Amino acid sequence: MRICIINEFFYPDSTGGTGNTLSDLARSLADNHEDLDIDVITSTNLYRKAQTELAQTENWDGIKINRLRTTHPNGLSLPGRLIANLQFTLMAFFKLRTLGKYDMILVATAPPMVAFAASLYKSLTGTPFVYIIYDLEPDRSVTLKVMGKNHPFVQIFMVLQRSCLVAASRIVALGDCMRDYVVDAYKLPVSKFDVIHIGSNEGDVTPGPRISKFRDANKIDGFVILYSGNFGRYHNFDTVLDAAKSLNSTHQEIQFVLVGDGAQKSHIIQRIADEHIVNVRVFDFVPMSEYSDLLATADVSLVTLEAGMEKLCLPSKFYKLLASERPVIGLVSPESDVARVINRAKCGYQIDQGDSAKLVEVLQWFVDHPDERQQMGLNAREVFLGHFGTNAIAAQYYRTLLAAVAPTRLSGSRNIMSENKRHDFTGKSESLEIEKRKQGEPAATKLP
Image 1: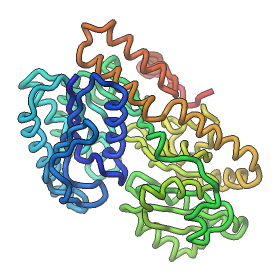
Image 2 (image 1 turned 90 degrees about the vertical axis):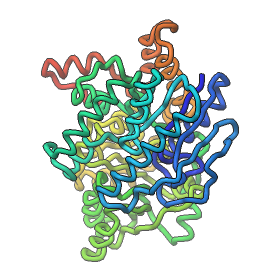
Image 3 (image 1 turned 45 degrees about the vertical axis):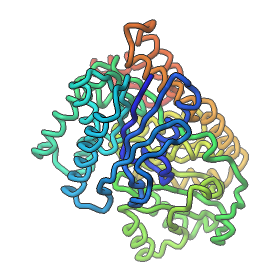
Image 4 (image 1 turned 90 degrees about the horizontal axis):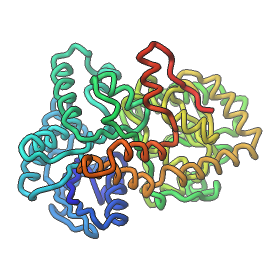
C-alpha cells in the first residue's frame, strides 16, 4: 500500500508537537509493515525554530521525505499565520500531484487547513484519506475566545472543516471526548471514527533516579513537582502558582519546577516576581537528549489543560510522563481522557482547574505517603507499556488504514473498528455514551 503523510513538521524535528508524533508513527509503521510504502510531504521548518538548511528530499531508512520551503507560522500575527498555513496547504497539494498515484493519504491538523489539500486531491483522483484530529480549528479559537463563534471567518471555516470531515474515509480522534464533540458539532456518524491515543515512542523516555543531572546542575532540593512543555494559552498555570503560594511557608520542601516556553511564560515570571513566590523556578526547554533525565527529576509530574479544551486537544506530553514512572497530577476536567487514564490506572490524581486547595492537599499527601507514590509511578509505567507505546498505537493505525483503503474487501470495517476499540484503554462504549447523551442522560465521567 502506497501512502503519503502530509504534515508541516516531521523528522528530524524532535522539538515536540505533531511532527514528533507523526515521525514516531511513520517509523513504526515502516519498520513493522513491509507492505507499506511511505512518502511524506512536509516543510523545512522545525516546530519551535525556523530551519531552511534541511535537504528538500531525503530517504529516511525507506521513508521518502519531500520538504517544502515555506514560511514558518510561529511569531506571526493571526492573518500572517493564516497566509503561511494556506501557502503550505497549496504547495503540499501541488507537490502531491507530482508524486504519482497513492492508495491512501494520511493528513493531520498541522496546519489546520491542510486537510483541504487531501480533500481536493480525493475529488480529483478518488484517493481516500484518513484525517487525524490533533487540534481542531476553528473550534479551539472560539473556546479560547480568540474569535467569536459568529465571526464570518469562523462560520466559513466551520463549513470547510465539515466538508473535509465528511470527505475523509476515516477520522481519528485522540480520545472519547474529542470524538463525541466532533460527532455532535459536525453532525457526523460515530461509525466513521476510530479513537487512537497519541502515545509515545518506547525509547524516548526511560525511568531514572530522582537525583538527576538536571536536579544536581540546578541545585534543586526537596520534593519536586515538575511541568515540562508549552506555556500555551490553553494551559492554566494560575492554579499552580496559587498552590505554590499556599505552600511557601508550610511545606518549604515542595518545589515547583516549570520547564518550557510559550505565550504565558511572561505572565508566570511576572507573578513569581510580584508575589515573591520563592518555591517556583522556571527554566527553558532542555534538548531531547536530556529529556529523560529531566523527567526523572520529578517526584510528581504535572499536566494541565484549560477547562473546555479536553474535547479539542490532548496534551501529548502526558504519555511521556507515564513512561517516566512518576505519578501524574492532571489539572484537567474529570471528563477528559487524561483523567480517565489516571483514574483507571491508579497512577495519580485528577484535580479541577482553579482548585488550588485540592492541589495543596494532594501534594501534601504525596509527601507523606512515599510508598503509595512509588506504586502510582509503577502503575504509570505499566499502563504506558501496555497501551500507549508507539508500536501499539501504530498497530491500530495500520488497521485503520486497511479499513479506509479497502473496506469492502476486508472482513468489514466494523470488525477493524472493534479491534481498535479493544486497544482503547479508556474502554468506553461509544454507542452507549452517545445514546445516553442524545436521551439527555449524563455520560460516565469516572472510571471504576
